[in-house]
Length: 210
Image (cartoon, rainbow, N blue to C red; front, top):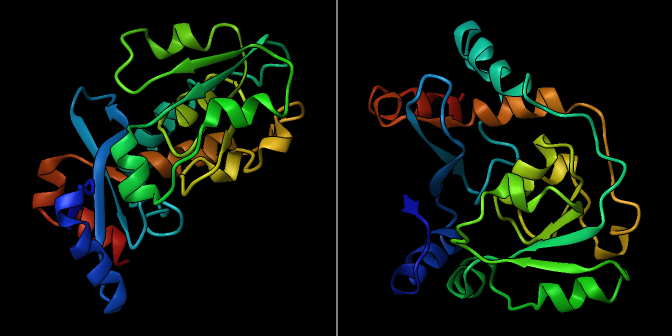
């Protein structure tokens, strides 16, 4: 079980993969503060984010709770001036992503739009950063999920729960995907995160092994 992967224990992550063991990756939730005000954490099995495990909505109550997030999904934006590049930490890129890439430079090769860089820990609210965005480009930052919910298309280059609703190639910047089905996707993400109490009583484990 990993809450993030740091250089000091990266070898354990590699060992688990090499030995074919199940491994679990946790981090802040896709929607960290729930409708009930509780703090949520995402957990994925054999993945950094929910790609296949944990997609099933557990029960009627959780389905209703998840759809509360879906009700805030905005229509797809058809305008916007800038490309918002959301960077992750150098440590994450080196340790988890296993690569180093200058996203701002690479994005600029595919568009003449102004490139705006948002760094991890930026104090500017993400809603303000998205105000004039044509699209968001990131490796796997949660900013992609925030953008898609706000109606701003996203392009993700790494393993990300946003993939079903996003582009995956920088060549798509000028014509980013705007797929249908975001409400159901948001519901699945909301059901792929848990409070500590839910983890303690086994809800997370049962969902990941259902």
